Amino acid sequence: MFLERSNPMDRLDTLLGIDYPIIVAPMFLISNTKMIKAALDSGVTAAFPALNYRTDKELREAIQDIQSYTDKPFGVNLIVNKSNYKLPAQLKTVVDTKPAFVITSLGNPKETIDACKPLGIKVFCDVIDLEYARKVEALGADMIIAINSRAGGHTGKIPPAELLALLKANVSIPIIAAGGIATASHVQEALDQGAAGVSVGTIFIASEEADVTPEYKQALVDYGEKDIVQTTRLSGSPLTVINTPYVQQIGKDAGWFERILIKNKWLKKYVKMIVALRGIKAIEKAASAATYKTIWCAGPSIEYVHSIRPMRDIVQSLTEGLKK
Image (cartoon, rainbow, N blue to C red; front, side):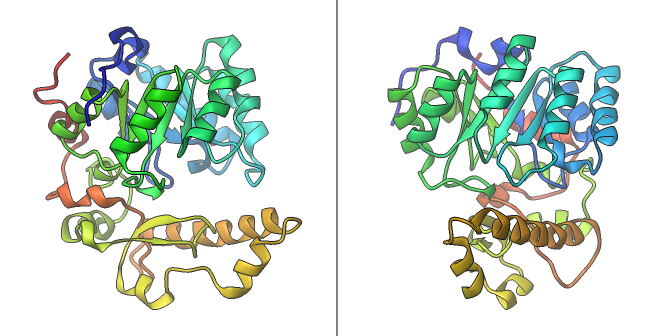
């Protein structure tokens, strides 16, 4: 399915003044300042999750470190739902330090949009369907990031081309395609289908700059698309992980008691918060230390990871031969 290409003036590279319309996606417990700097040096942009930093001081220092290194545009990812009790402090830090853009995920971005846009900070909102895309467009989002069914981490439900076509036909702001993108041909295909840019995550886990265990990086080389499964045990929402023996042992579904509690409208927020915190701890341990409890987040594009490479080489593989 081929749609009209996006207006060149609406493209991500034009909007941000970068060489290529690519975001290195914010990845929980993976993205770091080394990765951001390497991405910016390679002609693309990048973002990192605010939640990768335990304190507001650490978050502020990370933003300022990148800003002292370069004036090229980068972003911060904010979880904007009620379970993120750190959001007020994180948003204040963003307002104070003024990165080029913010990516909002998992909640209502109104407060973030209202705080950032008057300062010239662009706001890109993750969406998985048309209903939410229309809501964030009405709130004033600058772009939407279309999370499709091939995305890693918290994934969408609609296949890439179908989601892009649906959004292109019904919203007027530019769309960044996210999910399953691992090669220059994938990038070009998304642009030809009308995307203003792409967001790429999984393949950068296997970068030299990523501060995860060698075992995690090697898993992206050793496993393939057929080994990616969805689990609700870690956050209460579908999350894509590598189907390691430990994941097989614990199962992919939340326990029956958790499922009952999550259905209770009064308890839902608190139960999901507890489940998510527990899941975060499990993922953090697997990412930062060798352990038999291997829970490694990744998407289907691990199929295209064949070695551990520097960020610049991975970016080059995404940009070689792209049409301007």
